[in-house]
Image (cartoon, rainbow, N blue to C red; front, top):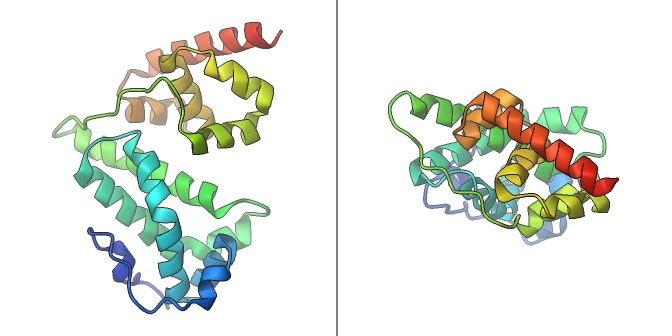
Length: 201
C-alpha cells in the first residue's frame, strides 16, 4: 500500500515536509519507526528530522563525495520507509539508530562499488580519534576495556576494526569502503587483534 516515500524528507536540500505535529516530538525513534511501518508520513518526517543530521556526519567520515552522500542518504530513507515493518517485527531490543546506520553503510558500499567502475570516490582519511557517537557505540558493543585498548591502536588499524565491528561489514565490504585490497584489510585486522590481545593481557 505504501510504496512511495513522502517527498519532503528526501529532497537534496534536506528540507523537511511541513505538518509535523508538536505531539510527535515527544515520541522516541523506535515508536516513530512503528508508526512509519503503519504508513504514518508525519512520523517518517520526524524520524528523518531527528536522525539524518548525525547519519550524514557519520557517512561524511567515510566518503567525501557530496553526490554519493546525497544518493546514499536518499536510498537509506527510502529503504527505511519501505522496510520499517522489518525493524518492528525482527529487531528485539535493537535501536533505530543502529538499524538506520546498517542500511546506510551498506548503501554506501553499494554506491562506491558502482562508482568504482567510472571514477574513484574520494575517501576521508582516517582521523586520529573516533567521533564521540562511534566511541560510545564501540564502548557499548565491546566494553570499556576493549574500547580503551582501541584508542591506543594506530589510526589505520583502528579504522579497520571500526569498519568490521562497529559497521558490521564483511572483509570484502570493508575493502570497498576503505579503498584498499582485501588482503590489506585482513592483515590490518590481524595486527589489530594481536595488539589488542597484548593490551588486554
